[in-house]
Structure formats: C-alpha cells, structure tokens
Length: 212
Image (tube, rainbow, N blue to C red; front, side, top):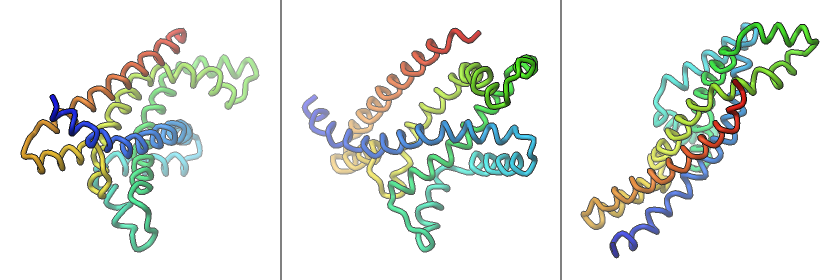
C-alpha cells in the first residue's frame, strides 16, 4: 500500500495533459460535429461531398498516424507544440465521428415533423433548433457517451509525441522498479474517470428523457 501511495502522485500527474486534450476535444468537436452534420445533409452537393470525404478520411485512418502527421509531418511547414498538435489532431478526428453520429440523429427524426414545422411558418433554422436537434440529441446521447469514454482512453496515444500521460508515467515507473503495480494503478485511474463520464451522460439522458 505504501508503494502505491508513493507512485500514485507521479502517475496521476500525467492526467493533466490527458484532461487538457479531452476538454478541448469535447468543447470543440461536439459543436463542430453538429455543424458538419448539417452540412453533410445539405442539398448543396459540393459541401456534402467535401464533408463526406473528410469523415471518410479521418475515420478510416489510425489516430496515431494522424498524430504523427500533425506533429512530425508538419514540423518543417507549420511546427506546433506537442500539446497543440495533440489537441488539433483529436478535435479533427473526433469531429469526424461526431459528424456521423449527429447526422444519424438528425435523420432519425420523422419527415412529417419537418412538414408540420413548415406548415407553422418556421424557417429551416427554427425547425432545426426547436424541433429536430432537441429530439436528435436524445437519440445520440448513448453513442456520444461511448465516444466520450473512448476519448479518455485514446488520450494515452499522446505519449507517441513525447507528451506525459497516465499510461506513459505508469510505464516509466514499471521500467524503473521492475514492477507492474503501476499498470494496475493506471487502470484503476482510467476506470475511475470512465465511471464519472458514464454517470455524467446518465444525468444528461435523464434531462432529455421528456423528448419521446
């Protein structure tokens, strides 16, 4: 127990970068995902095709490879600090996933509701804001919750561009002490974080439960 208490602060110290990447990604990628989803469903074909190609590219290639590209690949063209490169990569990657999630949510709304809104004199923007998006959000909360959990685990990848994180710090301790206890501690930290995320999304689900 004393050993765990000794190594815990160092391993937990890696959570700072993980939380920074996580927070920036959630704050930026969700609204961008909504905007891109609306663009994906736009009747303006060039825009729809462009967003379709973007989601195909970033959902179809490994996140680690994208990190290498934005940090190492652009180093001679537009060098970025490692944390900035990580945030940019994660936002672009997760926006692609959120775009498809929100697209599916918007398309799940019955066409009759669009027609009813039009009959009431609502504009397209009013229809989306007051009718479609509130109901669509209820539909997409479970997959969004899954992505939010995946995101915190994916932050372990930032170590490939020399950023400290929970997993990397646990690896350093394990290599130093020849003991795998640090990996168990790291796993428990991730489980605690995902427990919090799950409960946050449960509360959000309850909030939107009145949309039937």
